[in-house]
Length: 387
Image (cartoon, rainbow, N blue to C red; front, side, top):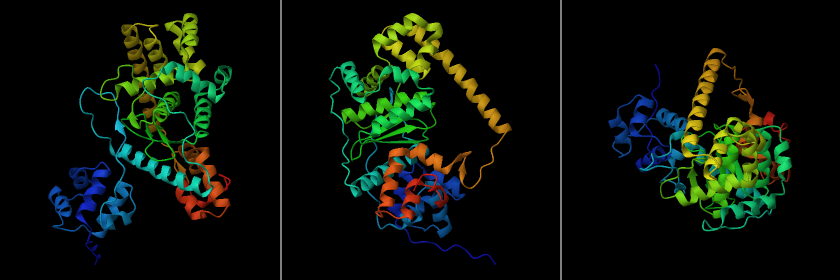
């Protein structure tokens, strides 16, 4: 006879908090657990109690530790950054995947702070503080001069991946954490309410698009204005429009100075603007936006080229999906979609975070178990990460 799972006494407010903060509705829980919405509502009022198996199931679904369900009261989480996505109406709330990515970034931000303090490293970002009222192009040139990466070097980089890694390295040297996780409706965000200041980039985006997002979010750090963003959009509306326009212009001038891109456009023209994108290691849409903002092309031409670009990208995505369905990859227990867990840790968390974990481990300030947890790898991967 199958033993029934016991009912567990949990605080209704904790259940409600965990559900809402994970982006789930009562209907989502009902469908996931195959129970009525009324029963889920009863759990959240204390009229009924879920079973242990149901709690375990929800913990996996919410990507939360089971222990969180046994708290005496909800944990007070920091509010989301200001939503500066471009909308004429009230934007829809972030989805489950995006909320999970933000929660992971905040966890790693807190861990980074602890690891830095263990090593007596200052956690405050080593950057100037600018105002949105400042001359954005002059500020972008000042910041670009500070990083000491000449344009000749930028033009020699062989790929967008090399470019992204170099810009990430430059930003992380300023005591700013940079992480990459998949999100759905936003391209990037900045967290500046606690130290170290942190940037999160959507790993689902093309690498060239991530470069622009990285510099856009760096601009938010300089302004000390945390935000949820969708960069590269020249038509910015909503309460954050001044900040988003400033950050877009900063990223554009930092990566593609007006005088240089003007000369490039005179050479290549709109028919070959992809040459400009390859030269600066940025996305095609970023180049189009830059040309529009600086008055080098009309809005009609911009819209036409952007529509053509979107159609090509859609066909490319459909082709990738069809190929993936025809040739599914085998995934072993130490790989994630064909990528080793050590490599994934390096991509998501970055070399700076890994070096902090490494040094703390070597000095005995954290255990190997802590290191595995912070990097989300198995013990056999520590050697690959030189830990």
